[in-house]
Image (cartoon, rainbow, N blue to C red; front, side, top):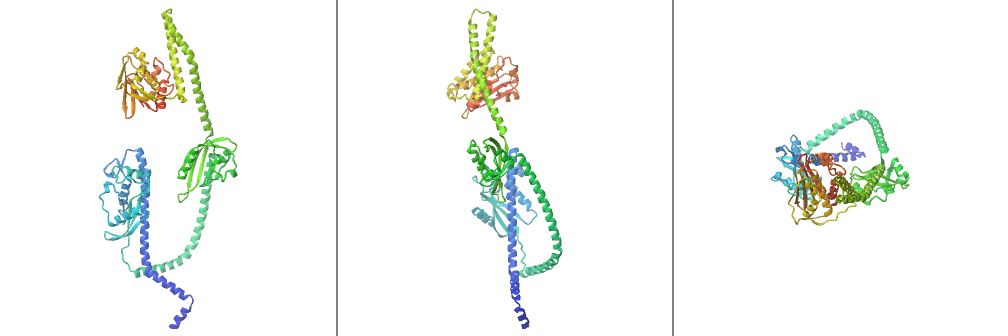
Length: 607
């Protein structure tokens, strides 16, 4: 027997095999149970971590993609008492609490969320020792999960706690602004609390020997099965791999063709380029080459500043780089210069391309030629300026003969040698001349304002005095129609910082308009009140009123409403347009109108 063992041990391979077998047995007998337990805990931790991440993702989706839309387009409330109110939907945290109970109601698992700063509805909740410890650990080290075994209701469980971060701007705003918030200085990235996931661990105390025996039997059985299975599967596996390889080649070829078609479609319709992280050009399409006038070799490796026009403000490019480096898309108009000096414009969309680590890999730029649009806009602006100059020049030239006509008609009216019939003719000439001069002056004023040549020179002026001077200019009209003027709440000493002449002109335009459309023997009410630091003037008549269509077009130059077109006294259509510019542009105030057909109209000026 001894010689038999001696012969066996002389074999050079026996000792290594025995040592290996002994190590394997020791491993199976002692290490496997321990490693199995550790593996079970690792698996439990992985599952808990994954479930916590699902909660974070769903909360972010619910906050950004659902609540923001509901806030913008609905009068629904968002609160924790949604089950008691029909017009309320749950807060993100409430949804998470409800879903955690729902998802784990039929499985041996538990999910809980808790915080060191709970809202009022959860303030009385009592935490157990693990929860207190995990909360303290997470707040001190937010990026380190807290996990351990623990007995829950007499069962051995694995409990893992993860930081619940403030990841969305909407979450921060909600937590900081709610009336019942326990903390109002949250920032993005703060750990608001803990997401705890509890999973069961095996409670059976199997002996290492039983476990080892089962493992050995399992390994032997698998070895026998695999040995047989290997030869049977190899053939089918190789065949399947060949088929898969063929299918992948076909799919790859098809997708490449699709990508090529997409690229061709974009290249045909847009000016395309790519740049690396430093802004150096790595690709240009034919449209880029054609419009810039540079060859491909002249563009590759260069910055896009090669086509930049010197007139483009530096702020445009500062904003561009700030936007795309923050991984956002930038869009805007850019003025460029081609190689031959020709100027062209493009509307650019620059997109940062991110890799799987959410890092900027390169930049893709898609541009559209907007040169013709800019040329058309420039021509339109020049035409508008030419029109303004023409109106101003014509208005100026017409004033001289009109003043002569009005002056001589006044002289003729004073003479006693004219009979009544001739006096009536001269009177009509005088009225027509004054109406035409008013029109000419209005056109001249409007042209000055349109070209920003009229400036306001404000000073402290008395409000009531300014109104009285404006009323004098309309007094003849009011006497002719027996209109009563009521002035309410205007203090004798009340002052306002404004251009007196311009403000008076605006008031004259509104008051004369009110007189024009007032009924005979009616009244016009003028009011003044303070609203904070603002002066609010109201001028109301009880005339014909206007419909909504006329009110909407009231301040449009040369536009008159239906009642003005049928009125005996024709206007220029410029008075209220000039008034609007005086109030809003020269005084940076506001003017509004309230009107009802058959009732009357009120103008309100806020300065």
